[in-house]
Image 1: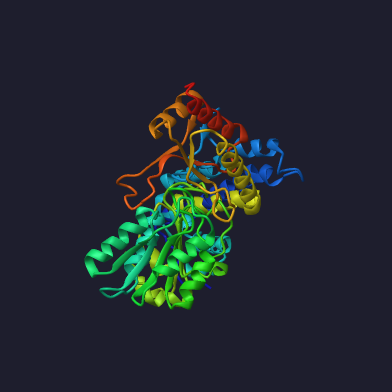
Image 2: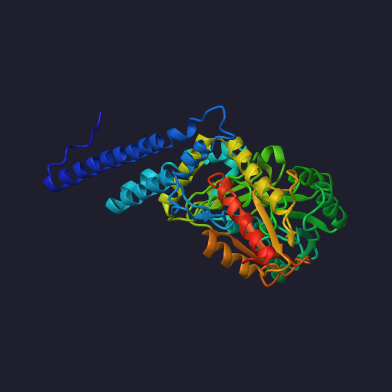
Length: 443
């Protein structure tokens, strides 16, 4: 029984009624948005047994994206396009907040634990090992700055690490005297053992930690992370992994990999809106990694939640992370992996037959994923990019030795092509035709 007397103040009653009505309307709006999302992704979950060769099925998926007609976007390695259903849901979440910022923000914020659980299942972790951060750089920086190390302690990274790994460790080197050693890896490496042995040979008595990309951003070399984590464990070292170029491309199970931390953004291969990412920190390592950004009550969290104490956040973007995961689950992670491998394998096999081609990425499935870096010895990268964009309506990224990857001893000069599941073989053929034209001097 409620002992509080009913208010006789009309203005107070009206206020309470508006509060109740607003909360109810917000709930209906959110549920309606979720129902519309589920209905829109239903067709992509229904695939015939011939989906591997059924371009009609993959065309239905492509139609879910907002990409311009005829445009071949082949740069998922930088940022992926948001699928229409995910985009529409996020727009509705922003509309909800514009209508009633506090109450409707609370509805989205209240999804946080459900989203954390879904992320944990998606990456093979427990929910108390998962933090929702803003991008891979934040996750990498957090574990780099948060782990206690002494002057002279060594950290091993690869030659082609992204700056979100290299620069946080360089900051530690300047501030605390940590020694950063960059491990040489072939372009492309000849085998997973070559990568593993290179790191094993670089370990000294002062080595404390290995931080490496699951797949690097320059040539897409796939690191044998599971074996590297076993090596690290056998030597009493920690193994941190940057998974930005894998999550959403291939299935990930961090417990099976045996890594200590795993950071991955959602705006690349998961095709979520920019502004959300995943950070995994192994449960029994959490008391050794300090958070970097804190606010009220951060100390009350004894698990990975302490790494996401960022106060006010763009909750529609966080909520859309759940939808991005659901979109991929509707297709199926294994189905996505097979599609990705088919497109990239076709590209590399055909391109390798073109005269003047310099291939920087391996076509061995143990060493490669959806990223292909290549060049022509008779055409500069700028010419390749311009010709592809102007003549074939294809967008790719440049790859060149310089300020961004100064440690690269091999001098990658060319383009990086990212083929994801919404791309087509016809789009890959456009790339091949452009390479043929430039190689033969016809362009």
